Amino acid sequence: MILPASDPASITACADAIRAGRLVGLPTETVYGLGADASSDAAVAQIFAAKGRPADHPLIVHVSAQGGGLPAVKHFAAQVPPFAQQLMSAFWPGALTLILPRRPGMGTAAAGGQNSIGLRCPAHPAAQAVLRALHDAPDGQEPVWGIAAPSANRFGRVSPTTAAHVDSELGPDLLILDGGPCNLGIESTIIDCTRGAPVLLRPGSISRLQVEQACGQKVLSNEEHLAKHTRGLEAENTPKASGTLESHYAPNAKLRLMDAKALQAAVNMLGDVMYAAGSNTQPTIAVYARTPLKKVPLSILLRRMPEDAAATAHQLFAALRGFDDQGVKLIWVEKPPDTLEWEGVRDRLQRASAPT
Ligand code: TXA
Ligand code: MG
Picture (cartoon, helix red, strand yellow):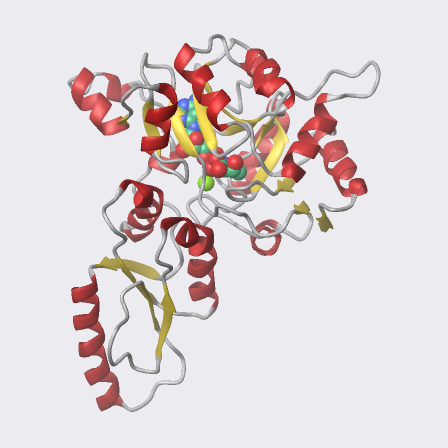
């Protein structure tokens, strides 16, 4: 069931459902989440079951912006290093997840049993309204301190950026709060704050450069950090992060990344074949490119990729779902530029193109 976020009764209904241990589809500024009470292991178990996600993959816990997020952070986290505090003040509420040492006994199932916990204070007003309602519990009731919410899609598939996406994959019995299409469109940037220095686990709309500027420290990627500090030892202790699995965010169609030149060559070759075979009514190939292409056969589904990274992130997952809905078998995508602001989009496209 889809409820409009503009109606205060919808907020109450979602908060009540979460307090009662049920699942809710929740809008955030990045992607829609599949939320449950982060402190209830039974409620969290339902998330893993609904997604078909292995139970040792930790989930992100969303917290209220009240008090700058600090009261909730102190509830779940054992310790907050100074650079993490700087990141909280710079980017919360917003699309930044911090991995912090976990207080024993708090959010155990949500953390997938790790001794750390991922915390994020979302900026979407509807998500904050639900979090506030849960935090300000009625008299005599314990507050609900956080909502565990991975992206509201089946494990390994493309994340949802509209309520309709969630409904098509996890409905119709799921309560879904419709807060409109997500502004950012790709999942939050994840910074591991448990290793003494910030480590980038997942790039997102908040760039590595912005994180470095906010905390005054160099931010290494997980691979860079491991290469520098260990000889594979730590790799075994590094939590499995489903967002860091090679094949993830995958549409049903096979996705291939090519530079503009290779893409034009492939289109040319295809044009010749299609011309010889006569016109084809059902498009089987989609092309998603920034560079204008010449001589694109009509039977290719062509979509222009925006010139800037933020606009591309905003539409990326919906575009991939759209191609799937139109039944294409192949998606040819022009490689995004190799700059920091495109890091999040590049990451999602690389994963979507990894063999399953
Ligand atoms: O933008 C987002 O972050 C979205 C929206 C709904 O807020 N949520 C999201 O959650 O992407 P999820 O569960 O799909 O992705 C969580 C990522 C995974 O890669 C997970 O492994 C990592 O965060 N993560 C969570 N807790 C962790 C922990 N304790 N240690 C390491 N990685 C963790
Ligand atoms: Mg996900």
